[in-house]
Length: 316
Image 1: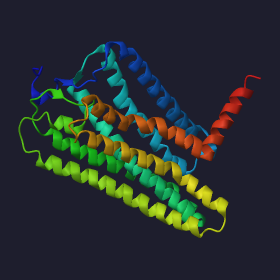
Image 2 (image 1 turned 60 degrees about the vertical axis):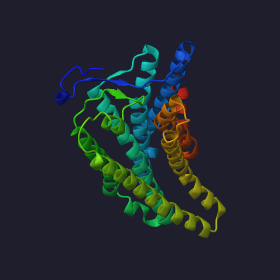
Image 3 (image 1 turned 90 degrees about the vertical axis):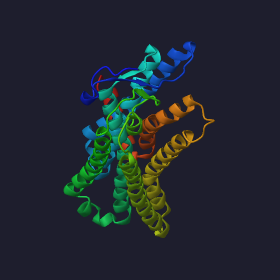
């Protein structure tokens, strides 16, 4: 395919990969995908609204938690609707600037999940292991620093990644994946040494993993030690329940990501399976997380029941 404009202006169209969906399955797939998307938007939007409007949730734990449904909405919104529209319209063209924005936001989502879970585990460590000092440690200024560090560090790392990619001239126009990523944009390059890009990409991924795993491992080991040494069974169960959602979220994200990476390493895996596993990274957590936190977090459940009770009483 020919480039429509000069490569220097970065205003050309790309041909992007698509699912090979049978004609009779197009609309069932589309409506199923839209149901998944609207369910994720409704559930995550509800948690965001509860944290904003309910005073009982105006606590450091939930201010940090606020970032998780927010980033889930970013991930699923940037990935899923575009793919579903392409399936229905049978088109696979994407404008280059739109592709870059999608790739940037999806990478921002992936990094933010790691850092947010690390911040949440640190908050639970302070709450369970140092309960008498919790309010003095998790002050408003500390909370602002933690949240700013989570988003600022993630944004800076991803920005450098894309700055390195943008310096290379582009002469190819086909992206194998069904969504844009830094790797797919890098493969559009026709000249230039990509060693720096590859080294930085690996280093950034390793850094995110090490920071996230290290903070969570330290926090949960300390929490486990505290729970074992605690004499009251109810206190142990309560402490472990507060951490269970974060652990499940982290394990799910790591498993899905590993499955996606492995699917591209084996030749016998079908292209559709590879593309589907890639989409799962941005759809599994946005669907599962609000269910996990709605069921496992008592304060969120109580806040939701209060709102629903008010809605029932109000008409009378």
